Length: 69
Image (cartoon, rainbow, N blue to C red; front, side, top):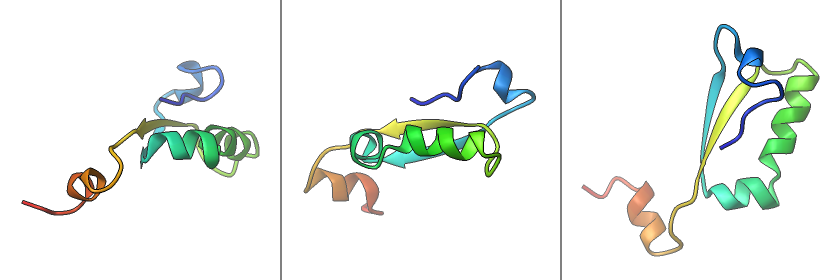
């Protein structure tokens, strides 16, 4: 879970929502929290809350994300 600086007051009246699968990759390799901090500070995007979901590796990942039902 990522929240912007000064959360929750920075989200008045609300925040945008980012949902990212492969959460550890977006947190560690792609540095999504840092990217969001930078974009928010530059006023390129509105403050956002991000939910980083860690799903299984292959083959379970494909079953989790594909329309398999």
